[in-house]
Length: 206
Image (cartoon, rainbow, N blue to C red; front, side, top):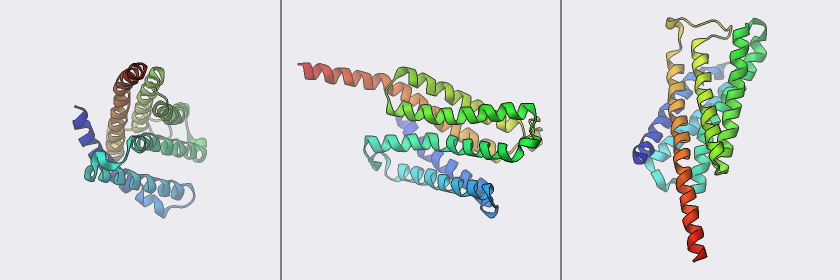
């Protein structure tokens, strides 16, 4: 199962990066915050494409354990951080037309996005069971955040079925799959790492 996940991850990264590129490419023709978000999104898209392509071509030979962990962390936290910035700038621009529901959703969205980025970063740096659980919690919250942003518009009104952004929804689904795969992998790896550490300690004592 682990081997299948390792084979699928590069494909997901490539598809996600390609869709992210196509979604935000037109933003480069904008001005101000729209242009800034467009540039950041293109950089992120290039990153996800490169990581996916390298993962397919080179595989496990890409780098050592530390560099591989760094890539995993960046893959998980880059998109939530980008969405946090996007939610913040959108709130500043559209504050006058946002209803109570929209305010609730955007506050939850910003908290969920930045909390996921921070907890996932700490989870990768510190091998702690509680942090694994917390990162899983905020991964679930972030999945809810993405769902709310699909079902409600910037005014806080429910979106009709015909008005749902299909490409954006697919983009969100792809990231949730990558996110859950990363969180579950970290949770499963924790007992194995603890076991290895215990065995190394016993060998040193002998």
